Length: 282
Image (cartoon, rainbow, N blue to C red; front, side, top):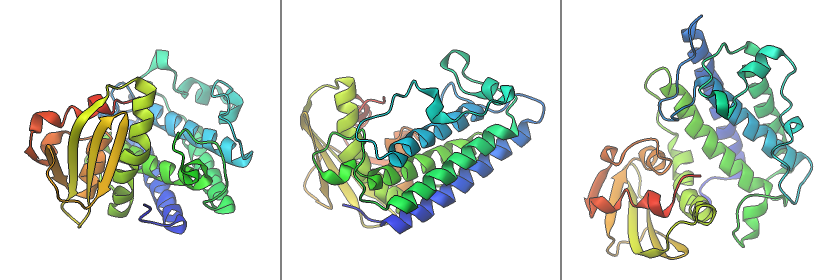
């Protein structure tokens, strides 16, 4: 169930892009001649690694949309990412064996990110939400395999990584409530089944979780039954554990950015960490 439309997501995508770029430039500027800061919410990553990661995702999705691909492109094909030939940029490009990359970070790397984000936004505008393309979702719903799926996913990911980038130099601003209310059910409906399948997560034993928004009327009840993830909106029947917080805090918890102690928890509090056993990170 979508809560915002294509044009609203486009606006959020642009705003979060600009905020992410601003946060990264601040992190680099504050570092001066010293090492660029680490990102507390992304262990082992620096601000430079975060730029490379998100910029790479944007170029990867851009290739899918530009060529209307029905299958995933080869992620080992580095031409997808259009990395500048500048040796300084190549040196700053994130590599698992050198993370965290503490710099220096050339201006050209930030410009590479900004250019890729603008190109991706342009593709989203050009295609609209309904063009069939490959996505990582295994849902039977045809809407899960469209350009609109990618705009929704990338808007959410941008917001999370903007929060990450801001956390590198201070207190990050909350996630926009409209994005967060869109992201919470997307976590259950799309990301949870994908992550469970990718990681071979244990079968659900009927665990019932409720995530209730305190700055609005929404609530989401999630039941893990065998291999299925069942999502209900707004129901009030009993659950094993309820976690309540702002839409932003619920989203950030589900993305493992904040601890459960930042939420109001009732019921079996020990069951809340088990959620991440049922939905492991990938």
